[in-house]
Length: 397
Ligand code: AMP
Image 1 (cartoon, rainbow, N blue to C red):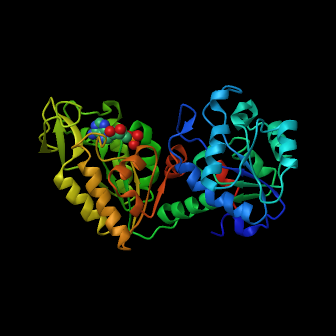
Image 2 (cartoon, rainbow, N blue to C red; image 1 turned 120 degrees about the vertical axis):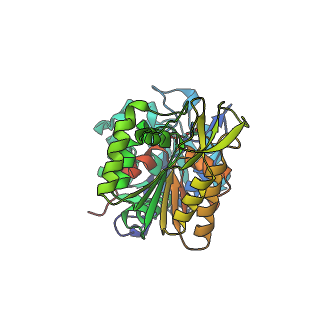
Image 3 (tube, rainbow, N blue to C red; image 1 turned 180 degrees about the vertical axis):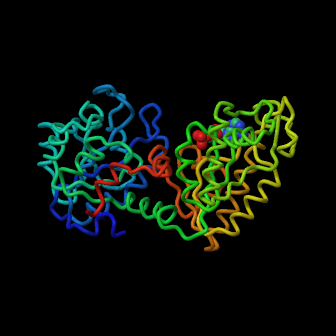
């Protein structure tokens, strides 16, 4: 972990620590409905407060155009206090006299949550005056919001250039896991890329073929690759205009010596609904009215056999329309095999991005993966090989 500065590199006692976290939790009628994100950052808050630092929480919530009570962080701060089992004060502003007074009143070990940073336009613009106003409130900046690190906003990046900057424990765990998966992985390394469309994952596929030994493609996007190979995909979700791009990716993989694994059979149905009558067919025998909704048994077997010969797996996107039975079978069976090999110590498995967490949770496999990232966009940009601004500012120069 020497590449980034962490909480091991600083004495926080008596310091005002501006802690950027992800509190963008799902809420209904003013109540938090899923507190996973708060639970993930709780150890960092507890550690800084426990060491006598003053924890000043910075976060955004929603996409407000300006101050908007429905996007206030107040109820989230209350939920954070409940989870931390310690008081969390709240300031109705994140800059200016209200915030300054609230911070000035803090004692060592106190926790204060400031109002939504996106109530100010300067946040998303990374406006130097707004960065300055935030920086006045702290002696140092700790970034524990990997999920917001792909954005160069004032509280996610600007502060890191103004104040001494450190990774929080959640950020640190995420960076360590990601580095083990793609930057310095044990080989062979394989990637599973599934999900709906090729168009949203072009850069990701382009980056992966140059980095992994095996690329397994599933989901709706595999249909575009099957089309590119001249196969009939009937009424399946497929992007016909991207068949050429799919061929280019296959050619790039060949040059990079990356083995591409496409489905050899599929579960097809004529209706896109749960428990629609379905059958298993070879990818050479998809009928004109068929929709491919999952990979078939031979493809599952093949994917599982790949898992048996690799040491590292990185996974984004389901193999099929996993929200509907029985089209969740491919995702569940491959996820189970990956979870078992991970639990047995044969595999490092890292997964993340959008629906992937939901799919692995539904498969009951997430807990046995080495690391499951809850970050959506940031995880995808990392898989695309992009530098994340909120991570770059934490690098030891
Ligand atoms: P993504 O957000 O790109 O990871 O895509 C996830 C979505 O892809 C899920 O909602 C799946 O239901 C959908 N999906 C996966 N495979 C298929 C398929 N063969 N046909 C239609 N949708 C699919």
